[in-house]
Image 1 (cartoon, one colour):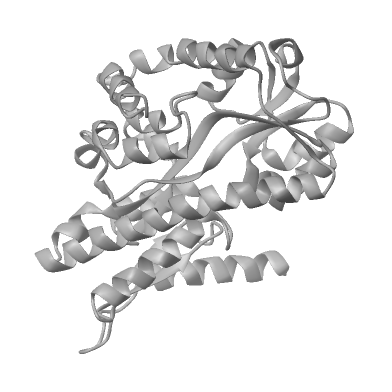
Image 2: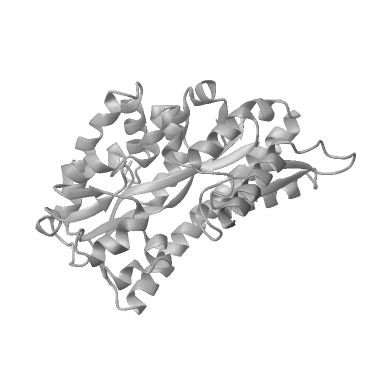
Amino acid sequence: MKRLVALFVAVGLICGVALGTAPAAGAATVIKMAGMKPEGEPETVGMHLFGKYLKELSNGKYEVQVFPNSQLGKEDAYIAATRKGIIQMCATGTQTSALHPAMAMLETPMLFDDLDHARRAMAGKTFDLINEGFTEKSGLRTLNAFPLGFRHFYSKKPIKDVKDLEGMRMRVPNIPLYTNFARECGISGQPMPFAEVPGALDQGVIDGGDSPLADIVSLKMYEITPEISLSGHILVIHSLYINDKFFKSLPEQDQKWIEEAAKRSADDVWVMVKDGDEKAKATILANKGNIHEPSKELHEHLVNAGKRSWKLFYDTVPNAQAILDSADSYRESK
């Protein structure tokens, strides 16, 4: 019975999205946006902020309805719904690389030194190069880019030097880029769903894994794996996407409102994630976790492993070298 009720609820949600009637005269135009993260996560915060800014800029002409936490299905399902125009917008990350391989380069290992470096690149030419040709292939328009945070290692034993990392059995997402990077690092990568991580740690199947600090804190990973190494090896970046046909159907002024709302919301998330990382570190330390800065040798080891993993892009992304060179040009030393 519970499953039947859940099915009716899901069908009702989708039908409500797909079969929504045109707004009455004077009523706000509703834009429906799907995401995968729960409330409070940077992605979902960014979705709500977009809606807030668009409502203000348009003087109430538009109302954004946010469906977080995979309420409208998993990423591939709601991306497809956005492409078809069943819903107008969605938030996601490198899942769009299935449509345009260059999108995977948003999470290139060891590409960015810090959040400020990444923000300059995403506000500049690097982001444009990654998106080159994406709209034509996908029917989606990328509105912005915002971080969920750098991935850092969490483990039962400290990881400070290269010898501490090599041979470690670490959970990795079952994504070629991640598994290849782990192999290049000398890690014994163990692909598995994140939901299986706590049990695998308890059973000794793995020694640790990697996640943004916000996730490490929200899931209290420091209680099982108290050693946190600030490796910052991959920055997780997500974006807001809009159905291009819908976007082009809007008046020019309305398009500008949407673009401005997307920019403002992304700016807010960049600041929020940077502040949140500092708060997360304080929480970890307050709960008897330990935070380690990688040695110079370990950092160089990760950089070299990252560069070796970039070879995956050369075969699939025609302008891969231009993207890498562009990101490098936004380094502070440049």
